[in-house]
Length: 207
Image 1 (cartoon, rainbow, N blue to C red):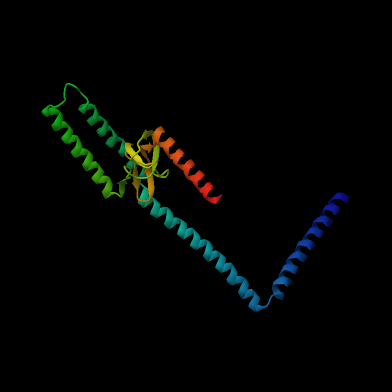
Image 2: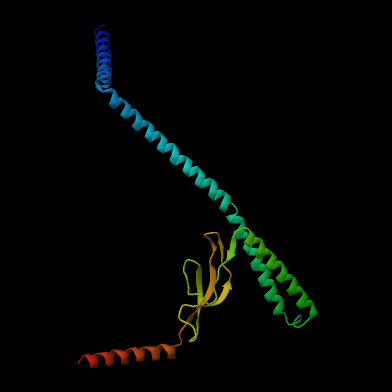
């Protein structure tokens, strides 16, 4: 019996505490001036509106990206067909049995037409080839696979394209695989000698 009474008294105290808290909150709210209440409501509405606006912008961005880049994976897979056409053409041209034959010429012509048509279709869908030959190596667009000695070109210039790269609008579909130029050893030695002689000359002038 005593336990039950204690429990009742405890629960009664809890009810009283909750009632007191609620009355305090009500009292606090009553203390707010009408201007403050209006300002509080305006702040809540502004935050809710900002959150809705952020969600709307995010959904718009996702929708635009889905529209612009929805075929990204398909486009990248399509590039394999262009590569295979190029490899087939090279294999046929290197075939000793077919060299200088009319069959080879006609086959290569047909492969070229198909390849050009495919690239044209890609262009219509905002997929463009990356210009590589003669360009300075750009790590964002090119992937250097080898170096070729060439004193006529500045070091790091693309002199050979191993595999074409493509852009889809402003996104890299795949980088160009390229070979870049480097100076020959003799050229490097001459440059170092010239630099040393210029340094020595400038030091002697200072003295």
